[in-house]
Amino acid sequence: MDLRKILTNPIIVLLVLIFISFLLMAVHFREGEKGILHQTQTISLNLFSPFLSFFSKLGTTTQRFFEGLFYFKKIQRENERLKKEIAFLKKKNLELKEMEAENVRLKKLLKFKEKTSYQVIFGSVIGSSLGEGEETVLIGRGFKDGVRKNFPVVVNEGLVGQIVSVSRDASVVRLIIDVKSGIGAQIVETRETGLLEGAVGEKLELNFIPKKSKVKKGDSVITSGLGGIFPKGLFIGKVIEVREVPYRLDKKIIVKPEVNFRKLEEVLIIVTNSRR
View (cartoon, rainbow, N blue to C red):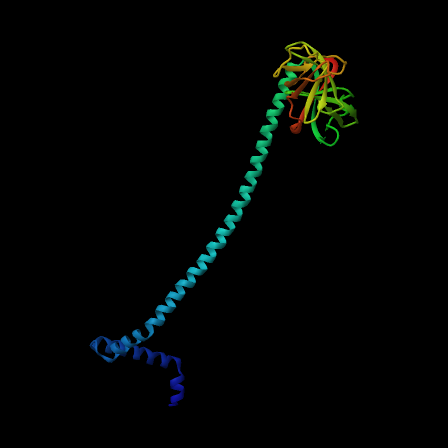
């Protein structure tokens, strides 16, 4: 029989290995702790245990590294999602605040519209030219909406100005603080009338009030109705300063408008000579 064929036969090799395994197991169980197999096992464990411990720790560390990397990517994605959600919520919050502010302004205008006897047209401010040599705003209403030159413009707080130029879809409003503005005005408490003109610093100067007048700081000023442009009784502002100037026959009276012209967003245009 060919020995080479026997040794290369897989079945015979498997049987031999099984036999050797059983033989080693039998010897291992029968010998004492000082037997050669036990000693060989102990030496092998002592010899290879540091390497096994190292590779075990390395495997654990590697596993934790990849787990940490996976969770880091997951946290990063979650962080990006939360950032987008926060940005979206901030935008919505701003939109809600803007809607709330607009609602408050429109309610005030509606309140004025309900209490006035004049027909009014609602308009939004779409542009302004403040502090540039003239004090005007542009509103998104024109002659197609029934707006005409010289129509008064108001808000709930008081008089804003008058229409000085009209196109099809827009109109220019000259504010009462413009130096070219002139309004017939009346002091509520003294019933005296004068001419209210624009002055420096978004204030107004009331002229032609005699020196003997009892006007004082805090008095209210309204439109007098004289001049035919502004109807009588529109609130303008309060007197903040009263002085007597040498060589002048009238008092120097400074009036502060109630309207904040820097924050105009919506206005009402009064259709003059037309009551509801």
